[in-house]
Length: 304
Image (tube, rainbow, N blue to C red):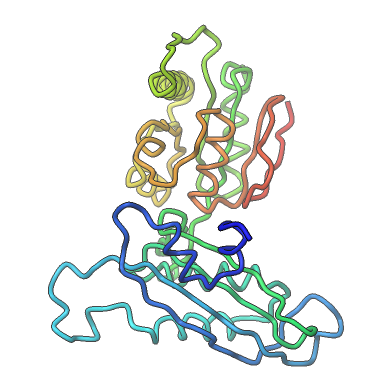
């Protein structure tokens, strides 16, 4: 049995260890936590509770000061069980995938949580356990902002890929107004400019050249509508989203700084990676371009 197959069926703690960076973090875990809940999309699962089992592993950032045996200075195990209980109590769900994502999101709201593995299994639907497992990182956790009623809510942006035809289209301002009308924070991405890009025989150098060329195109877009603000860092993106600015993404910093960054500099693949990283509501794509399969966010195509 290959290592990949073994890890696919291993406990999340082994998965976390196998995918740790060169600077591994501490981990806490919750094993074999069982709850009875009504969940499921099939009619036979409605009106009845069933046992579901949770296994959770959280990679944590060390506390900056000595913990001095003080429970208030650590991410407590109670936070993991509380996150599960809160999501189970929130509403009836059809999918384990939805429950796992919500539990992960709630755990990642804790300041020390950096990456979380969540495995959930149904124990009463057959002779074996049926389940899902997900991994989410703080970089992928949605930004939260205070609403007008004083409550906090996650911000899930609309990420839009615009091809060069859309950038130079006379009705670009009207298109942006229509996109803003969705009421979501708006992040615009672009591809390479129409003009030829310098070529290098070194792959790493070409990657940087292409990223810089994309950024030049981002400035071209921003110059066509003053609502557009070019940003490069996650901090700048978060601030712009909270303040409802229309963002144009300059990708170099985020892509080159990412530990688990995209293995490509294809502009559409980068837009998809950003959408997944930002927990976007969806990715809207303009132009006759190919979108990589297996997206974790919905993808739609904009009208020409």
